[in-house]
Amino acid sequence: MLDLIGVFINALLGGSVARRREMDLFGYIMIGTVSGLGGGLIRDVLLQHGPPLALTNPLYIPIALAGAGLAFLLKFTEEDWNRVFYVLDAIALCVWAAAGAQRTLAAGLGWLPAILLGTITAVGGGATRDLLVQRVPAVFGGNGLYASVAVLVAAVQVVCSGLGAPTVVGTVLGILAGTLLRLVAYRRGWNLPVGLELKPRDVMGQIAHPPLPGRRRGKKPGPGNQHG
Image 1: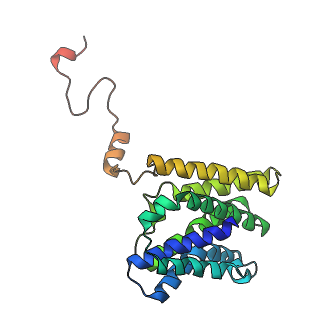
Image 2: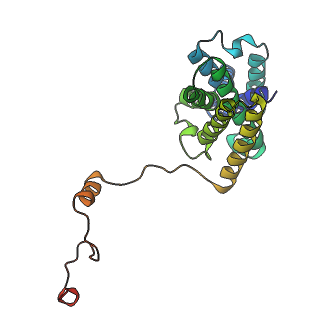
Image 3: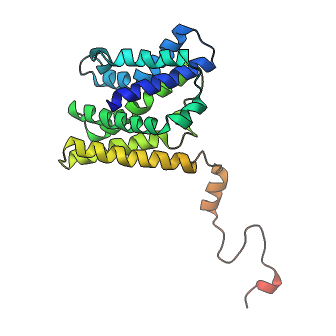
C-alpha cells in the first residue's frame, strides 16, 4: 500500500512539473507516469528477472495515471508539494529504497548491487522526469539529503538481511531511520557539501614545501625573533 501511495504522489508531482512547463494532456500523462514508475522500471530492467513489476501488477499504471490526471485537473505546484505531501514523500522514498534492496537480494545479487538498486528505485523516477524536462535532476543537490536517505535505508535492509533478521525488521528499521533523517534534514536545511575550491598547485606546493614550525608563510624572520 505504501509503495502504491508513493507511485501516486510522485505521479502527482510529475504532473505539477508538467503544469509548470505548460504541457498538454499527453505531457501530463508521460511526465507523471515516468515520475511515478521510472525508478522501479529501471531497477527491474537492470535485474533482468522477468517483466517489470509495474507491467505485471494491474494497479501500478492506473494509480500513476490517476496521480497525473489529478495534477491536470488541479493547480498544484512543487511548493505546495513541499508543504502538504512532504511526510508521505519521505515514507515513499524509504519504502522504495527498502523494496529495491529486497528485490535485488532476492535475485541473488550481493550487498553492493542491492544498495545501488535500492537507491535507483527510490530516486530514478524523479531523476528521469527532470531529464525529460531538460533540467538538472533535483536529487543532485539542494534537496535535503534525498539520495543519501535512500542509501541509508537500502544499507539498513541489506545489513539486517545479512544478519539473518526477518525482512520486515530491516524494512521497519530502515523506514523509521530514513524518514526521521529526511524530515530533520528538510527542517534544518541539511545538504551534502558542494565542490571544494582547493587548487592542485597550492596543495602540491604545501606538500613539497611545508611551512616551518613557528614561522608564518610569506614572512621572513626578523632580527627580533632569531635565535642565539
